[in-house]
Image (tube, rainbow, N blue to C red):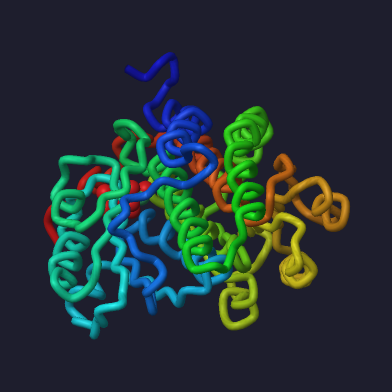
Length: 360
Ligand code: F6R
């Protein structure tokens, strides 16, 4: 049942305020974050996070949270690399496996490699899945069934659960006092409303997507917390619209990808106004000086400061800085969706892709 939408993907994008609200309600009780008591954050030396595809990008985003908020070093790896590299794993490591389906073959094999070496947590959307069952602790993302092959609501629910876990770890390690935790929880609880505002901009995003759909190649740029989202935006666009897209850290532009820039290559810059905004603006100027077309996705202040000379600017609602990756996932998903619709591809069942990759 597509609930009145043309595609499951559209329905699943639209459901995000609701399912994120439900995920928050599942974990936040009496002003505290309730996680399984076996998770002992106090004695951890490091976290290793392993996943594939979009779930891998959720892990890359969470690295910023765990390191900046909880002060725990985090290593993130692609499951098919991790499992064959056989990295050393110490006893004070928490190994986190993120998988919507809970059945991805490489992620499951990586989990089995860590069994008996580290404490194992799973972040999955299917409680009865192999990855959920074989972990010491399963943290459900509560996204509900995701039918569209391109992951959307599972990604933002993964981010939500990982953000909660990082806040809990920060509090448990004495890096965050009760008041700050309460502030962050209030910010998280305000997210569904902000996501609804972002969804309210679907028409402008769709118009931008139709223009992007004319391109053969697209670059996504992001810095800091927005860098993993640049990778995710590029993956989403290529998998459903078949437009070649690549994501880069903004600071990497001049180390290679700038050679691709000409007037045919849209450069999608995801940059809310933050401490690093001016650096990203100079990257944008380098693109524009070479005739490149910049699609800037930012907030009101960012638009006021940097809109001039851009090809298009999309203005997102205000959002607490820490949780901006969750909000900015929506325009990335909607751009991909509407570009695919404009190209007439099979949005929910893109060619060559399977929803659950149970063979390597
Ligand atoms: C992208 C996508 C894939 C999956 C990847 C991992 O939209 O859906 O990249 O994220 O195959 O799948 P799970 O999360 O089920 O392990």
